[in-house]
Length: 357
Image (tube, rainbow, N blue to C red; front, side, top):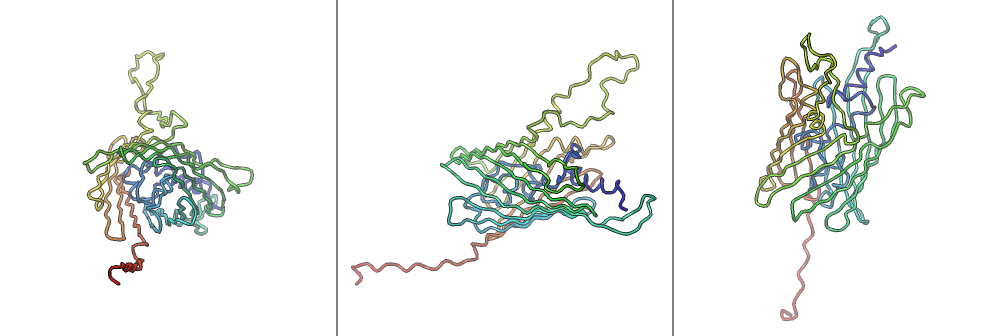
């Protein structure tokens, strides 16, 4: 018999990697950053609209014709040896719009199987995956809408679950003024088969908004992302927070409201430098991650993230770096291949002019 404590730990592992407001939903791996570039911009970003296919999972409305024929591979190893990855492919067909397909997975590794007395009786593994397909349609010069459909499978020891979810997105991309704005509703759906009969758990729904803008002649872009917009207070209720530790203080004094902290936990700020379309540098600050992963004895910088990207011919390499708690770090690697660059187009013969005949 597997230990319930160990299984509970597995269910919460991916959730705790992002914030301690986790634990409310299942399939929390769906909220993890799909690629190194988004990791560098704070872990969540829906205001990128360019050639990067990896933005599909963050914002399906970002799919566009520049992504046709792209194949992308992304992997990250979290502290504890948990491996997360994403594989995707973008394609245009003989219909309006652009399609994207992919596989998102997470492997938690192997664990010891114990009985009620903590005797080791074997080993078991755990992992989750989501197969997804997306579509985006652009109308006019500014607007695009998109959606992802996901089939989810989870295996945690002897327990398994199947679910389905969808993302809906709307984007305004004003290239003349270098402004992009998006709104995305993520992970709308539910469990088709719960881990245990009669115990259906909610999916990690989120409502997000994003805004990015640049300046003509300046090689950087500012990104602002707002998440968990459907609820106000996502602050961890820490009993250690006391407004007054004076024994003679008035006990009727109202508790501190933490308005600024509650507001900033919804916000991620980032800056990305793009040098001639070849080199990208990024830095971001995620206040929620900083507050949830900091230690009382050692603050550290878990809210900061950094990234580097480079385009070399038909290849695009991205690296995202994120400090975690207790001196741990997260390294995210992504490679995107522009497969159309390997196909040589046939030369079109020049027409012979009448004068040359």
